[in-house]
Length: 195
Length: 294
Image (cartoon, rainbow over all chains, first blue to last red; front, side, top):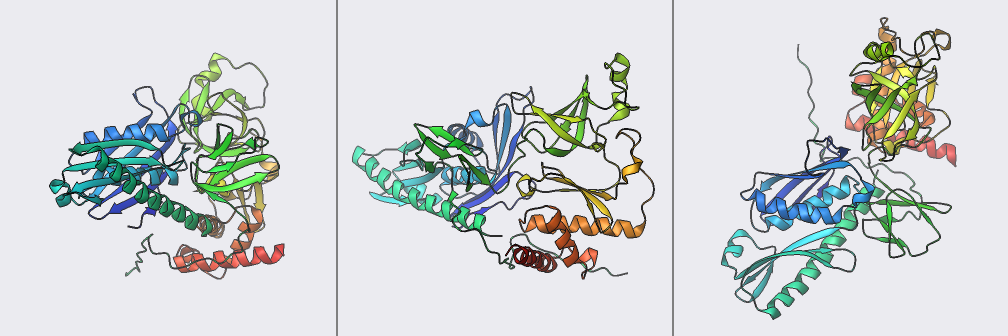
């Protein structure tokens, strides 16, 4: 899993993120002029995936929290997510791709958000499950953390689980997420120190 | 007649440039604490929360005396009063033109901020409003200066000097605003026989040499005479050099562009955008600039 940043030359920010069986390309255009016929300042469009409505609603709420609105007043930000490959953990892949693209577009953010999908398959915890593992699992959770104090921003859980199992999932997710943040930091370091 | 075709993927970039990067640059991502000291003023790319200064964009931290800001790799243009910008008219409205300058919001050029032909100083009348389209139309390129900023961050431009106004024949190169070095003047007459306007918003205009004595109509007339092929070659070479410097993220000011032009003379103009030639010219430019500084 090696995300690429800034490969689309015409958009303000772009990123490609893939994990096991899913991969997306996110392109961001903004901050730009706000026309009166637009309802929302932030627009999210998903292409090529089977359940765009649920994912886009979740993504919009997270991005709304992450962007520093008072530094981009009266500006629109348009986020387009193109699914290249749809396997398991699509929601977390979209969120990670969107965060990377927002960082590439240099839109002011309060913090970075990283998402991990965790599945409980026969008492075992699987990180970023494939589609087959998701179907076998008794519970599938998408957990989103920020990089200040690893606070939980959002979670979407389907299935049945015990409270103790939920806490185990949280801990496993936190380790995976801190690895993700290290990868993001390395990526930006390389990009900024390179020519 | 056969033509040669080359295909380059933007993923493949085997050429790395060697340059001495300034030591001690701190790289941050959004959410990183820059400092807990409240004595600093916050600049672009930062925000205050709970007495701590956080970064809001991913980039390198710049400390200028008491001002801290984070500059990202590429950004939309943040206008400051007094900047020279090159923009394109997108619409003609009542008593003003809307100008696109690669910033967050469109910039505004008020009718009262332009010089009327003939240089008269008077109140703008109904007649002037109806004649607006005769001065500047949709699609025209202009050079202007930032007069002030509105409360939402959009810029108010003015062309109240004979050096600003509608641009005639030339080439526009769009680069990131962070690559344009702030200097006393942004209008340069290059010794190779062309002029260049380095707009602070990242729009660079390359045109044939401007003669100082020709200014008569106050910046609205366009010189549409035929340009000789040798001059066209100079313009094309200069524009390609600007693209090479921008692709290698070298700061753009008159010295670097001149050095890159001289280094590019051994290649043909049409070869200048090949990756190996771009790398060669950029590397030589960096070497010469570092030699001059040390």
